[in-house]
Amino acid sequence: MSFIEFIHQRHSTPPKHLVAPAPSVDELTIIINAAESAPDHANLKPWRFLVIDTEQRAALGELLVQALTRKDPHTRHALLERERERALRPPMLIAAIARITPNHQKTPDIEQFLAAAAATEHVMLAANSLGYGTIWLTGSRVYDRYVMTGLGLHTDEHLIGLINIGSIAPDAPPKQPNRRSVTVAYWQG
Ligand SMILES: Cc1cc2nc3c(=O)[nH]c(=O)nc-3n(C[C@H](O)[C@H](O)[C@H](O)COP(=O)(O)O)c2cc1C
Image (cartoon, rainbow, N blue to C red; front, side, top):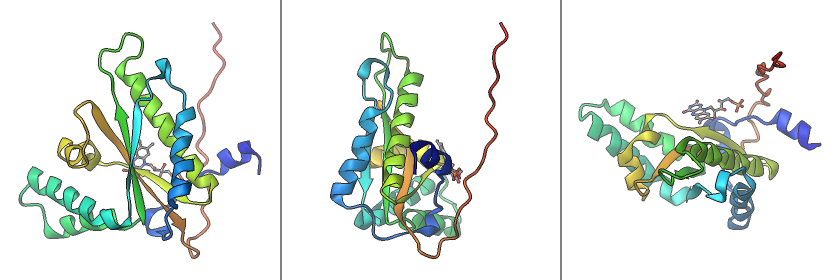
C-alpha cells in the first residue's frame, strides 16, 4: 500500500475493539521513536510519552476515580465504575505529554502544543503501520492537574491525550474511514 493510501485509510479503533497483545517492548521503541521526526520549531522536542502497561491500568483507573471524587464527592457510583472501566478497556495506553518551555523566544506555547500533537500522530501512525489499532482520547480527566500530578507530570507538562492501543479484535467490524470534506481554496489576493 502506498503511503498516500495508508494515510487516506487511517482510522481509529474504538477501545472495545482493542485486545491483547499490546505492542512488545521492541515494537514500542519503533512506535515512540516515530515522534522524533515530527515538525518541531527550534528543535525543542516538546513532547514525551508515558506507557501505561496492562498491569498499571487499574492504578490509572483508580487515579481517574479519585480525580472525579475530588471534583464532586457525590459522583454517582455508576459513573465512577465507568471511569475505572475506561482505563481497563485497551490492553495498553500511552499518555501523550506536551512539555512546554514557557516564554520561549522563538516558539510560543501554542507551537509547542502543536508539535507535541504532530508527534502524537506520528506515534499513532507508526503503531497503525505495525498493525495495531489506536484511538486518541481526552475528556476533562486529561486536563485535570490532579491526574497529571498523579502520572508524575511536572507543572510545565500537560497531558494532551490518552492514546488507547492494542491489537484489533478479529471480530471488530471493518471500519470505513471518515471522509471529512477538507476546506481548501486558492486565495485570490
Ligand atoms: C486531541 C483529540 C482529542 C480527542 N478526544 C476524544 C475523546 O475524548 N473522545 C472521543 O470519542 N474522541 C476523541 N477524539 C477523536 C478520536 O480520536 C477519533 O479521531 C474520532 O473518533 C474519529 O475517528 P477516526 O480517527 O477513525 O476518523 C479526539 C481526537 C483528538 C485529535
